[in-house]
Amino acid sequence: MNGDTVLTLIFKAGLIVKFVLILLLFFSVFSWAIIFYKFRLLSKVEGESREFYQAFLKSKQWDTLYQSTKKLVISPLPNLFRAAYSIEDEGFDEIRSTLNRIESTETDRLERYLTFLATTGSITPFIGLFGTVWGIMNSFMGIGRVGAASLAVVAPGIAEALIATAAGLAAAIPAVIAYNYFLSRTRKSVIIAENFSRELINHLMRKNGETQTGSF
Image (cartoon, rainbow, N blue to C red):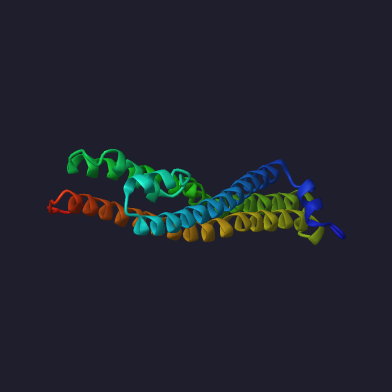
């Protein structure tokens, strides 16, 4: 095994270990794609939310605000505002129901793909562990065939096992970190959207000279 690199050991690995490594590679590549996508998306969401809310506080007319913020389509806030604007003459029960429905839709959109990161963080260590067990089994079978426990017999199987373990951890660790990070940012955006919905309802009630009853 002298001079063997990690890549050489991978090519020399058995079919099962190669399958495990390919599966882990899939999880890892997909996870990193989601990480880059979610980072860009949430950055845009937060930027648009700040931009819209500043415009909302400064605006005196909803008509003007509606026209000036049509380009903002990623943040939940302008989407909630446009929905409230389009049905502001409806009953408050209808407005609440519509805003709640949009909140749910926006939450699902912001949380999209986070489940894959959580799944990756949960199962890839076990997939890597399976590759580890399989490599060790090959080592013991090699000992049985040769009849001697020499380093030349056990080293390839142990190396396969270690590679599978490392690959499982390499896929899992970034996924777990990213999941927790993006979940925190997503929840913050969801809370901001929920508070803004209440603010819209209160604004419409003040506009129509009514007092809010019950909880939103």
